[in-house]
Length: 426
Image (cartoon, rainbow, N blue to C red; front, side, top):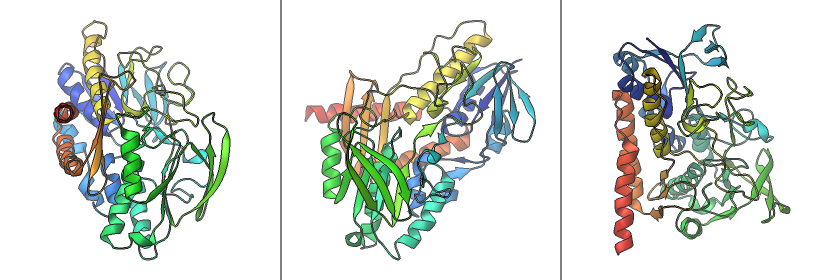
């Protein structure tokens, strides 16, 4: 009997535990360890932040489902991993040993890298965690009583740009519903070299379409932007040229702001030689396996992936849900291979698929593969995306509650490809 530990109980961690239960031997023990005792559906955080969803709509306690699947659950964080000894120290002092480990922690949010950034003692909001979304909601409800300028975007080193665009559009839609949009100047500040870059070098005509959408909604933008510091009511931004040299300084006023931070690896793994890169992300080979510690795998946002291309201001590469599900499935098969005395042979399909809600419409993009040149390079928008994301939210949360392993994102991408092919024929 082997003991397999999954670090993290988010989208990647829970999916990983469920797939392992199906893939490994019945006598093998699986344990999920997580600092968050409740699962929450991260893509819905922007809706929580504008009071379109309540927290209880998008989160639940996974303990009962895990128990039914004969998976142990320890809702305690990991203080430090010791991969040389196949063990970890938990925040409560316990030592947990393992035979195989899958790291699915997600990232550490690097608010501390910019003075005044973030909801913890800073001046900006976040939608990266449901706790942050709750704080953002409270501040939003106060803001709409006395509206003023808004700044939304993603700072240097950020790798997940979709939620920044989403949140800007959702705020715009909510302000129009409240009939106070005319009182709120909006600016989008991003480290991307151009609007619609998305950390992917653009997808289809994402540049032209996203610029058009921002103009239509009267949202100004600053690209190639480094946020140098944030003060109460003002954001200091250095705009750079194509060579990465500062060309203009901006002091952008705001009464409400949400800026996505850069990501790092979590403290429990940061700085472990052979396990992580300098930012603390987990090093893996083509089978999701760490090259140094051969019984350690990693999936999701915590994985080290190089940027798609060099940009004047640093940008990272997003890890979308489709990619995470693919990593999970490959890892489950590869752990089983090791249990059977075979070498891993499954590879994840590193493709980017995303639905971005704009409140009353939305945008979707497909990049197959993620790194150019691509077989599919498609970007589209319309009201159907908003409806699709609402439906997807309900479907995925139900899937996590039931503990099923159906590959939702594979269905999604097949449908999206069908739409893309249809549009090409018109």
